[in-house]
Amino acid sequence: MIKQKSHILILWFKVWDLLLTAFAWVAAYLFRFNSGYIPLEHAPLDFSLCAQKLPLVVLIAAVAYRLTGQYQIHRFRRLREELFSVLQGTTLMTLLVVATTFGLHDPYESRATFILFFALTAFLILATRRCTWAAVRWLRARGYNQTHAIIVGTGRVARQTARALRVTHWLGIKNIGFVEDKPSRWTGDLDILGSSADLPHLIEQYQVSHVFICLPMNRHDEARKVFDVLAQTYVEVQLIADVPDLGGLSLTMTNFDGLPMIGLRESPHFGVNIVVKRAMDIVLSALALVLLAPLMLIIAALIKITSPGPVFFRQERCGLNGQSFQMLKFRSMRVDAEKETGAVWTSKDDPRRTRLGTFLRKTSLDELPQFINVLLGDMSLVGPRPERPVFIKKFSKTIPNYQTRHCVKAGITGWAQVNGWRGNTSLRKRIQYDLYYITHWTPWLDLRILFLTVWRGLVHRNAY
Image 1 (cartoon, rainbow, N blue to C red):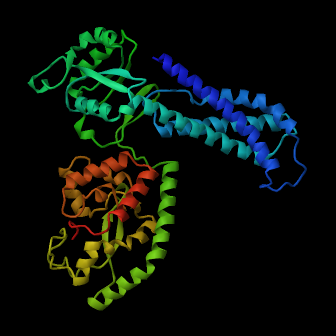
Image 2 (image 1 turned 90 degrees about the vertical axis):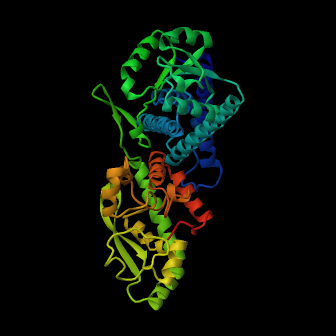
Image 3 (image 1 turned 45 degrees about the horizontal axis):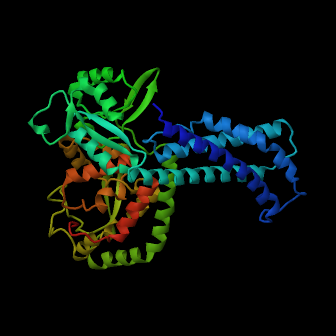
């Protein structure tokens, strides 16, 4: 159901999109032919040619923006969805304008102008939308443009949903209470408004716009009955799965020949994402190796002087898709460290460490050679820390979703590490933070983790 206020917002976006497109069309001409920043090989085209084509450009833009879903307005729309639709719309619009121009042999043919037009249009529309949404969220956080919601269920996910609605107050969705067919003494602290049969009356009484169904999987039949009751109303319905074992996984929805298909374990690193992440890894790891080369040479020399054996320590670890690779570190232990004990975790005051190795591990300087692993493509700068195969077999049997860590490349640092979960800390907590990183990955999150790694320092009391 589209509210009246949504109609106003859609109209606002339509008007501004077309005005900005017209402005960008004229601005691209002026910058190309009048600014002097771009050399002219021929006499500049007359401005009248630009002006004559303006109505057709605006008409094409209106059609292209509509076809690419730029006006699908709802409170849960994510930034990347809007970014994608705007880029789709401006790309389609520009291609149609170019095709029309060259197809009709229009004298207004300037490739540089078309490129400027596309870039300027996309930037202006996105900037205007971001400013608009910032204003809308500011108003919602202060009580304007509010809608009401009811949560069906009183379990763990129902409580989390209520808490999320309080925290994300800028969405402007206020939970007025819960609906539960099987209340118990454990739900005495919740505001239970009635049973699922009361939903039509409650929706009308409280002017509810959203209903969140938060029932566990073992109450699937009840969820179906609730949906049948809601079929009598015009509210928006969201189903939030209460499945503990799926916590931290990325759920995606696709259509498979008319059948709704839910993906439970899908990596966000695909398509353009994987290109962006790999480019960041190559550039930043190469830069780090150049800047840290003097320090690494000094450490290598000190290792060679203070203890017999090689400078580097190579150890089998598992990364993307469980594939093994040789992870590099500066050697911090004796050469025969695992000859008697086998594969074991390092313990506090481990006698196998060299004196220099104790310092290197405490300061994480022994990890510096892993920039080479990143450059070779075995690892990423940011990701779950890689583990040894022998420990993976053990942990995967006792910790749910442990293998999900391997749907992305292992990293030198990660979300768990910058939040203090490294060394001798809870393994389950580390997995929880790793899964959060996987499902919420963006290039900006990687940059934030790298910044926090440097800002909070490399020394850690739990690292040994």
